[in-house]
Amino acid sequence: MVGYVAHLFFPRSSNNYRARFLHHTFLLTFIFVFIAGGFFLGYGRTRYPSVLGVSSDISISQLLADTNQKRAENGLQPLSLDSRLSQAAAGKAMDMFGGNYWAHNSPDGKTPWVFIRNAGYGYTYAGENLARGFSSSGDVVNAWMASPDHRKNLLSSNYINIGFAVEKGSLGGEETVLVVQMFGSPAGQAVTQVDTPSNPVPTEAVENIVPTPTPQNNVPAVITEVPKPTAVNANIKNPQNQLDTVIVAGAGANPKIDSKIVSRNIAVIVVLGFILIFILDIILIEKKKALRFVGHNLDHVIFLSMIIAMILVLVSGSII
Amino acid sequence: MLATVVFVATLFPGNKQIQMMLVVFGAFVYVLWGIVHHYINHNLKTKIVIEYILIGGLGISAIFFLLKGSGL
Image 1 (cartoon, each protein chain N blue to C red):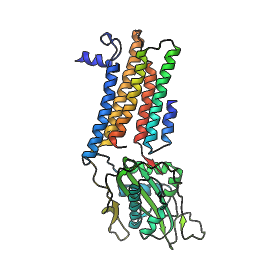
Image 2: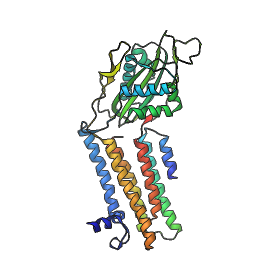
Image 3: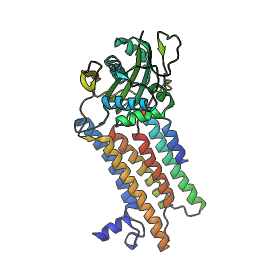
Image 4: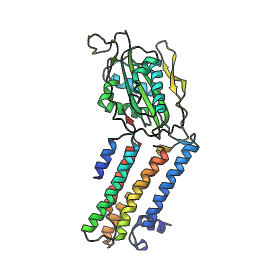
């Protein structure tokens, strides 16, 4: 048994001084296993979404807590959750899934302010941050804080209220979790935050809009679920000391197995395994000074390291 | 060159098609680089070319597994 394991992983006479895993037949086998595994997991996600799918640990209460913590660290007053802004955020999330777009303005010209006004929130200042593909509330807020424009929204002294939506669905063929964050200060209400300049407040000031990304070709949508708004307990008390209810557009329960994490971990472990085998090959063959006609192991290590970097880039979330 | 591929991929967050194309391009460059390198060193063999192609294929198939399996 030990001998066979050594035959697989280490260069020795039994494998022509090249680990068996690095022989062409095994490499080809791994390629087929990856391709077949991808189709298998993809089928499992489609057929059994309650078992295998994208899950997230993002909650409105945690998003609010993290946002207000960042504001406190910067000497700003906390924002209070407003159900109208949350409803506007939910409407925006549903519109993005329904229209299959990822932008502040919809392809048919709807701005974020349309959703805010339609939710019955008359504003003096308003703002919006968007995020997708993250797994935790902390990661979302940290990503916004790391971007100058999003950070400006989060730390603006012009806002009093905030609203969130966390929505799961398919966007551009990709199953993902959208987070919409809406900011506002009600019309006619003085902003009493620190550092507020004493200038006349415009009636429809639009604050710190992050520029819409360059329009991309719309991929035909494969929307597997149409979000339906449901009222859920946000587990946050409003000024009247009652538990607030916010409209969350069909977030749904998390599947038992997170397909994103499973596929990422398997891909990383296998590719890392090959990198280690190549490094072992470099070390041991240098020692044995065996002559072989094989590719440069260092080239393979560098290329596979790039693959791991790409895997990490692909699973990371994005913000606009 | 490969680091540039990764960097360019970060400029297209959420665009999996472009990111996948970058991976395929990176694999192509890597295979080409291997062939040129061994040709210059006068030890280019069919077996070596196949090895570079298979390692490139391994990288692409790992990314395919990730994209297909996780619904990205």
